[in-house]
Length: 303
Image (cartoon, rainbow, N blue to C red; front, top):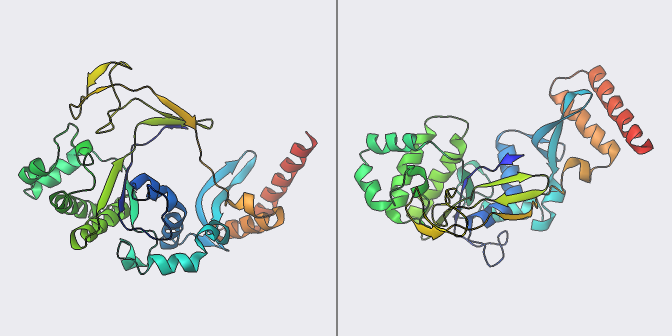
């Protein structure tokens, strides 16, 4: 697959029936626990609901020109939470739901993809916030990593970040919905007693069922340039630390509620047919693609 992206996860500290365990307030844990709900909510917002499932992506199949949908079966994915109505009852009455204005779910947590520090610096300068930023945040180079060193965020930090991310929303790029959600969470953090936690994912690599976590600074999470077992000084935040070893563990990525895993073959073919029709493909194209799939299945069984 390749190196993992060092996303920033965030969460408002609000316990509920959907978030459990001793580490429920940790941003990465909250993000993982509510991932299905957040994915479904985004699919609703982008109109990617079809026949009792939500579309999460697509996949190609050798010898077949049409692209197969990937998705999750709603009833199966939400059984663990008591069903979709139970989730809606929780989320739509929650003060930590940063997606409440759009009837979104799991709005108490989210993620941000890394941004060029120059974009943040430009906004700080435009809004006359450079001095406030220097007082509120640890100074790092690149600037981006210093924004997430302290958690939960302090009030001055939230005020600055709300201004920055509200400005970023105006770009209307592919990440605008993430900026908007975080800006809403910052407003909630400023207007309620709820703490807002943030965390940067460490550098790593995922491939062939194995997840590697590379040596990194324990404070800012930047990839370590030093020798394992030796003292080094972080080139970004200047922390002195002993360089840890690379960690290796099984990649626990699993999608048990995927269409192919839940639906029987006939139901899956009907779903794919309905999806392809919604994408404008002809019945003849669909019949040919499904027949090729059946031939491939028969050959695999013989082998």
